[in-house]
Length: 257
Ligand code: HEC
Ligand code: HEC
Image 1 (cartoon, rainbow, N blue to C red):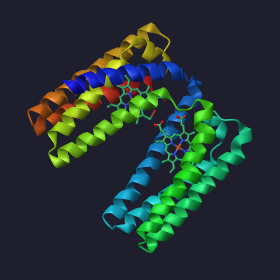
Image 2 (cartoon, rainbow, N blue to C red; image 1 turned 30 degrees about the vertical axis):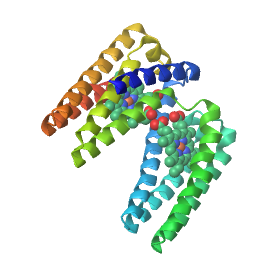
Image 3 (cartoon, rainbow, N blue to C red; image 1 turned 45 degrees about the vertical axis):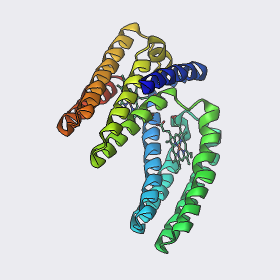
């Protein structure tokens, strides 16, 4: 009961935050490229997580692979023209320099992993964050209003899904139910007209109606996940998780992304 009230409070804070953040409008052409960049960024984050998992279980091969990926991806991003990400061409050199920093820190992580030196890997991860990830975000993300408000919803959905997988693996049904409630309160906020208009940049009322219908579908699936988790019914949990993707995530991405 308390957690429900806390969720409503959390929804209200989120709403206020979104109103304060305002809109990030970008041209439809740039949007597709930005989506690609965001997915790349989620992979960057996953690579850092893989490094932590590697040192946690003394499996340094996995750390080396993750570091190699970060080097490779930085090289590939250097080849891209920054204009397609909505940035000024004059910033190309700075963009490349930050990607070189990513390559350099990733290389130092790889070397430490070759020596099975967990402390060296940790120091490398710290440098990676400071000199590449955080440095680039403070240079190119925040000042350009590129901290898209939609990201808050999407990364929360994704992390709820991840936690549900963990819940299933550990047979921790209360974790699954908690995440399902989290999804429902986010979906509730995401169904508000003002949020759809400003955060997802959808000016047409008819389109907002279609958007809301899908969001409501996601909320229904999430409530089914919650019920199945409360009953500790793994089959029903799996089934309703799959439906939440089909009727929620995938349905909406096909139409609105
Ligand atoms: C050369 C610049 C640059 C580097 C280096 C960089 N990022 Fe990013 N990152 C960006 C930009 C720009 C965005 C904003 C994209 C947008 O939403 O328009 C972003 C967004 C993100 C996001 C949010 C993705 C989303 O769903 O919107 C995550 C997570 C992220 N970065 C993680 C990382 C991690 C982890 C690293 C380091 C391993 C890293 N980034 C390195 C430029 C960079
Ligand atoms: C009602 C619409 C809608 C639903 C439901 C929805 N999404 Fe999204 N999602 C979007 C849109 C629109 C974008 C593109 C945002 C942009 O480019 O500004 C997006 C982008 C994303 C991204 C790319 C990263 C980012 O920050 O843009 C991820 C990851 C994502 N969604 C995950 C999910 C997951 C997982 C679910 C289901 C649990 C889900 N989404 C449900 C509309 C939706």
